[in-house]
Image 1 (cartoon, one colour):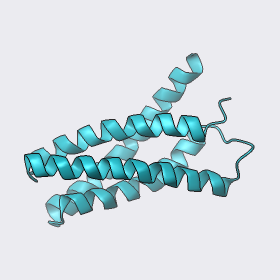
Image 2 (spheres, rainbow, N blue to C red):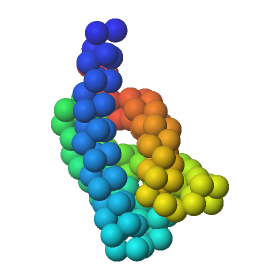
Image 3 (spheres, one colour):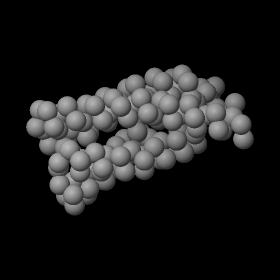
Image 4 (spheres, rainbow, N blue to C red):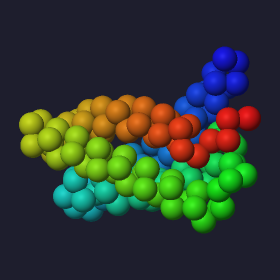
Length: 132
């Protein structure tokens, strides 16, 4: 149980930093540059994904011996694409419901992040972690 708690805490730190990257890019694109918030959310998600892969596989999850790094990365991308789909559906519905003000986009993004965070941890633990 101690290892799981440590892993969740590390996942939280990596996720917090990834969220900062994601949110910063989202706000830059949607609020400063005036891009559509849903498109901005997709771009910011992808940018944070690169950091998240590198940090997650180095500090949170242990590499499985039965999986090549290429397969690991492809699996990470597939799981993340599902997370992106969840993120986009929530952003689309939330912006449609609440509008695209900075406060509304922030509230929707926080909710979307919480949902995707649960998906990411559970799916990566299941399909990527060696469980050492």
